[in-house]
Length: 180
Image (cartoon, rainbow, N blue to C red; front, side):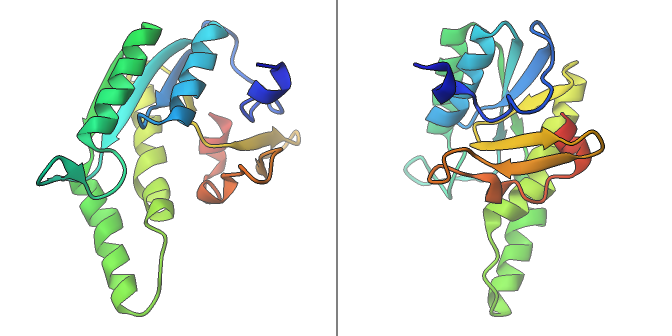
């Protein structure tokens, strides 16, 4: 694969030195698995984290992302890469901070994005907190976006390939999140 295709969006801003510990949010999908593999390949100490957000439905199906099958996929990838993988239970916070506000907004005639609510209220704060507990200053995801630093502030930018851009999921990230 050419270097241009695997830039993973953060080449535009200062990255940690190889050897640094990086927590990777592993959903079990291709994007986060590739992000973890690229970081391992480039010499980072990777720790995989998955967040359990919802109950499994009868038959092993979850209500969306982060099912048991997704965790098993993430664990298999982490094992193949030789990195540790942890699953943290965030079901109570997810119900309180995402599901309840989503239902209230929906019943009021609005259509909020549960993914944006989750990213703002759960995922990125939990990932940064868990990363700090694990001695990591950096968090990586499989989102296709770029970040830049203009000397004063970090900026979230669209991915080079606008057809694959996922910056809209990350638009509420604060400076602390973008810095790490």
